[in-house]
Length: 459
Image: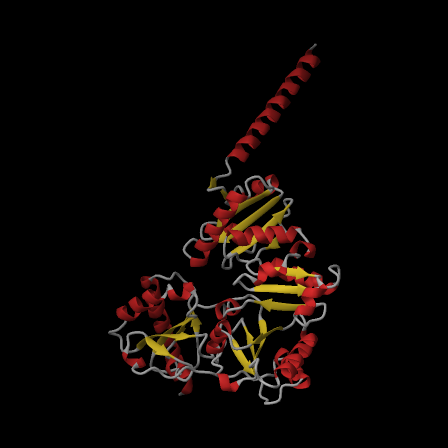
């Protein structure tokens, strides 16, 4: 009887523990905080969220960064569309959850990862989206195949957006799979595939070719596709067919390495000609641009045949091609303004002045993020105008070749300390006036100490 009583008590305790544990789990599930359908995760609840959701897309962000705000807004929009799906969106503030970000190696600027089936060690990196549609497109393409991209090409031609078209005979071959992988990685770019022989013939192409359609200067130059070879040619010239054929034939050898474009004289292409400073009488010519550093390369030849074009592209891929150094004209009175307007010809002379601390905004005129910094840069120049040893300047990085190693994307804020050495410090802090001034003061003090050390060693 005593043994039965003891067993009964034990069973009761176990039931209490199980019930308590179940209740605690339910409370834990309910305790995951949300805002606008997006989980707000911390170190204490991150693992619970991983266990609960089969697909957890997490944005590790810094709340004061412009890109962080934009991606957070995209997450909120996408969350509303994904309420009935198995994908859950979440954010982690890396400025508050430093230990968690460090443990997950997510301390860089906005990091977005998709965690699958609770696997914490092998997340899938997600490209930084431009909008909520980017997130939805990425998730859809990631779960699909090349066959999902097949569409009516005429619909894409009617669009003003950049469209990447793959002309493939078979969708299970290597080229098609690589094309689809690129589509997954570039959700903000429109990708389509066609196997229609009539459409392929219309463009005078063969199978297994990639073509970009409906381009403007802004769309090409903000495209994540890196290497672009551009042929500028007058369609009415006697040698148009010969040059165009040579360009297309040469492109075959660099498939999936360099995207090629042919530009004739239309309104859209005039914008590109202005951007690359190509004048009508200079055509035909070929320019190659890398969209990571915006450096332009010019084919140094008056003869455009297949062999010469191939040699040019190959020398570029091998790092042997010499960039075409370009500069806008020096603006009149550029050094009389609060914010000095630099060009390629004046950049290094001003920036590497050993007696001046120079803070330069490298911007792209068609970038909204760049233009948003103009008022702040004017404020900074006003705040420092009484300091004769400080120069605040800016330079259009799209119109002037920058002959120095730039890190990251534009806009970029770079300080050149007053030293007898060519040093550049990239500013990555808050884009607020007081923080910029504090950064200038700190670097000036550091430069003074470095100058003392150099003078001491030189004695």
